Image (cartoon, rainbow, N blue to C red; front, side, top):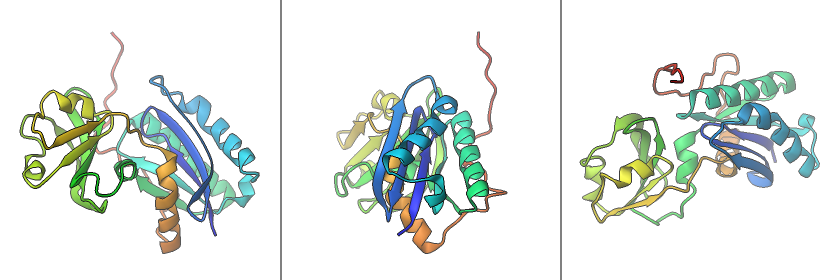
Length: 223
């Protein structure tokens, strides 16, 4: 019955959970556009462990959201996860950010679920899952236009999840599309996914693991 600490920092939501045997014992999260992960992440770790009446030494593994997402957010989460794994001598587990988002809707709610994260301008990070939340298309950065995801709306109902769904609304007018802009990546859904990976022994190399950025980082200066 492994105890796993889950860290989600890929977007504006700073989210931490601790779970035992895949079931949440405590969760703490705060979604703010200011990206306060550097100030909040370690505090949230302490708070969830305290609420669960656990010590860091009780943790059997650390799971982290691997991306795609915010470059800075991912760096903060992965750096924290690596530091904990080294100090505790426990394995590192990575969870695809878009996969955990897809688990926020009920199975069968649509024929296809497409998590979409804003990647600036008209671009999004996206992938596609079927009714059983099996990934059926690779994750990629793509520019949204009126023909996006057309191969899926011809086959059934499609729900777009996440902050990227807002920009999709303007261009995707087919009645088979629905949009859920309230979905944000969370450590809540990570609990089940990280437990499955722990049981399967699917661990990352702590020394060499890097977030899945998908795009090169571009430094932007304030005007």
